[in-house]
Each structure stands twice: as C-alpha cells, then as structure tokens.
Image (cartoon, rainbow, N blue to C red; front, side, top):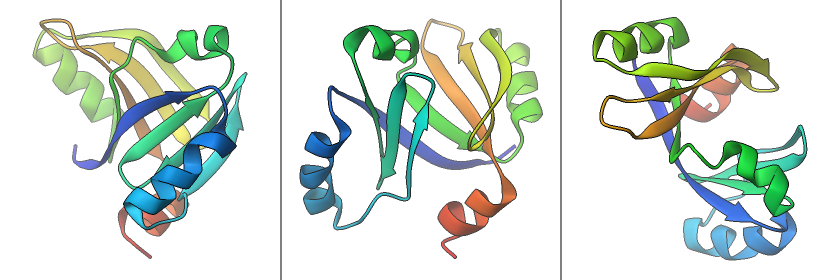
Length: 126
C-alpha cells in the first residue's frame, strides 16, 4: 500500500467563496470538483474543501485528513495490524472506494482508493 496524496480538510459554507483564495495560494485550479451527498467537494493543491450547511458537513468532521492510497484493502489491513479500527465501512463514491478509520491513539482519517483514471490524471500528473 502506497500513499498517493494527502489532503488537509478545509470546511466552508460555500465552495465558490472558498476557492478564489486557494487558487491564489496554490496557483492552481481544482483537480476535482463534485457533489457528494449533501456537500460539495473540491480538491485543490493539498487541500480538500468540504462545503455545505454545517449540519451536512458535520457528518464528515470526525476525520482530520483525506489520504489517497493505492490499495484500500492493504490500508485496512495495516490499520488493523497496528490496533486501528474501521469506523465507517468501505463504500463506493464518485472518486472510487473509501472508508473511515480511527488510528490507535485516536486520530481519524478518511482513506480513499481512487479510480484508475483519477490516479493517472492527478497522482501521476498526467
């Protein structure tokens, strides 16, 4: 299992209001922008902006980061072997498979295995 990308999570009421400064700071356009359930997401540089009403965002607030991995099953095995636990079971989303896990000691992270086209486009830079 390899970590392909790590995103710091930023919380916003409105995605269009949050993105201009991040465009300036990163010098980039979002690599991803999509709706997921009741929130909007944008990945720009090393930030994942999660926007929507506070009650909609609260569903995802337990995770401090989003980590894109090459092998979600391998990540789950590594977490379990180290005393971590899956807190939200694997599910499918618009970018691939994901799960939420609590590491031994308490931190919670979202792990995502992107679809092959996203790996090529974003992680591999092509």
